[in-house]
Length: 254
Image (tube, rainbow, N blue to C red; front, side, top):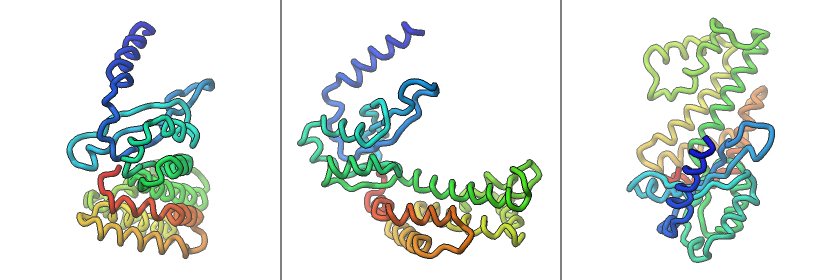
């Protein structure tokens, strides 16, 4: 395996890293972390940088540009600082997750570029808030973690399915779940999650942008008591509002 690994690394160096043209035509960058190592020693994360220009233009798929050990502002900022100044000036958009280190590094090294909070990560924030609310209500009302016959546990996957993709059986299961008054906190967060998904699925970006902005304004200011998960989600979206909405002005930067 060591011999095979060395061969793969050598060919990767030749085809990818040593290719002087691999940075040509890059206008849209994507940055995210990846759990590379699952041991107690060594760097657990790598920072992955991709070219999203073909995706945004609709001409192809994303291209891997680089992988750097570690996950921090310094890692991304150092990588950007090593690039040619003219190349950096050509970057129009940087798509990223919610990690503030990536945002700060991009703002300092690429001040002309628009920062976009990737839709996948925005929806993930919503699904995490929904799961955490469901789990909390499960513990409060049943005194235990979910079991296979518990209504909330049985619906855990159905709840994160977009309504437009849900089957009739799934819709009925959700309706039955929310007919129970004690499940109302879950229903409130579920409705927010569905609105987030629906905003990204609008055919007209301007409608999606309007819908998302309305949602952020609502949950970023007033949240019913007893919903800490939704309050946290609203605070995050409020802080990153320009980055969330920027996607609708640069569709495909994902």
